[in-house]
Length: 122
Image (cartoon, rainbow, N blue to C red; front, side):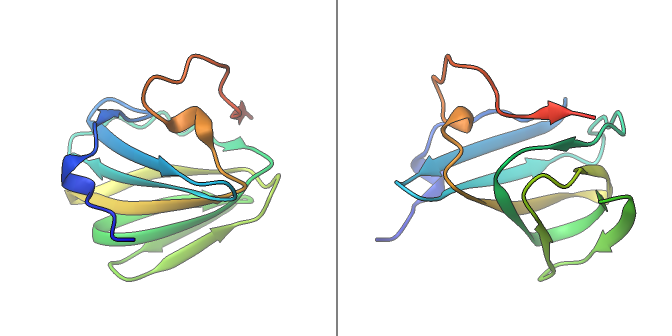
């Protein structure tokens, strides 16, 4: 099944200057995020029970994973184990575009979700 991200509804991202589009199946979910160069980052990290893959498509991203800072370039993939603190600390001057893949599925990121978030801020 081909996913056409262009026809999916968008929603604000976790920070000002970001937009996300999300899909979910029974066992995994995926989010496509476009972050503007002027997006605001508060430096907070978070953790959750889900395993997560971050796949950078465009731009540059500075990530924190378990206390380590990583600078990702296009094509890089970063793994966040379940329960490990992580977060996006900033993007480069062009902004960034990336996928986040979660297992099990994060239905709290779907448009229209009215339940609680699964994120625990550190």
